[in-house]
Length: 152
Image 1 (tube, helix red, strand yellow):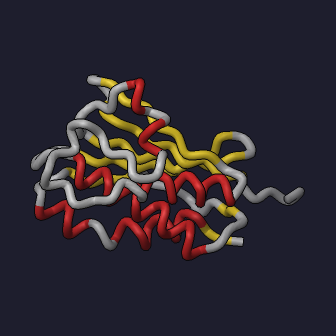
Image 2 (cartoon, one colour):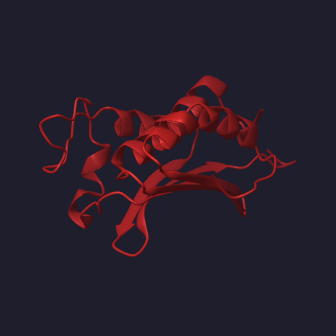
């Protein structure tokens, strides 16, 4: 049994300096301790990867906002950034191994494996990882995991 709020706080703390270097407004809504069943190392990795991607894809002076909310029998960790909009036709493909968008650029040294690994981690924990993207909201990654309840 893991305290997902604590895991998220620890993973986020490692990226605050990187956000400051890019002058990114880096914030999170206050959250409480929410419990999930899972492997702490893997859960830390998925949070760190989502936060790192948001910082990397946001322009200098942009914003990254995180929240952790309880939605019935699930908890959802949301990461919203102000980077380029991901076209709707790419929403499922970005989770494919080695997929790189056409606008990734020649200097992008990342392999394209991170989001595929993140989705695998989410599914291994009986959860989901999804994306939405729009001009007004930016890009939002939603990691939803089964919440620990007294019945689970």
